[in-house]
Length: 163
Image (tube, rainbow, N blue to C red):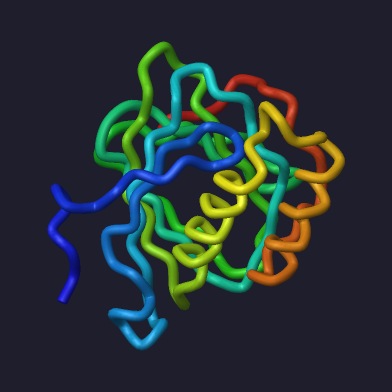
């Protein structure tokens, strides 16, 4: 049975995102994981990444911009739902003045375990006291372990279209 959202601990990512796992893959025979995250205001674009799992973004509040590699950015507003197919390189960010709250459904599961492992890594190797090179090597090893490949630098922010 899934955990009640009030009991769920927030995890922190390398880039300062706050995430919490609402449904772990272990609860669904690794078929799906449900994650909630807060994309801070004026966050920079992530690098273009691809992976095996499908991601379904539901923007609860605020605005989230998503861009596929070599395509125009799309701005998702509160109430929007957007699907990222497997292996399709994409990046996302929030260039607005308010943070965005997003529910992310991943199938198959795995991103939940990646976030837990990266949170643990950051507890052992705090970014403020760990060399950037060591942290990058360790995070790349985690991305490799969980099948996430960075394929291009972060997009240059431009005008996006709203959904």
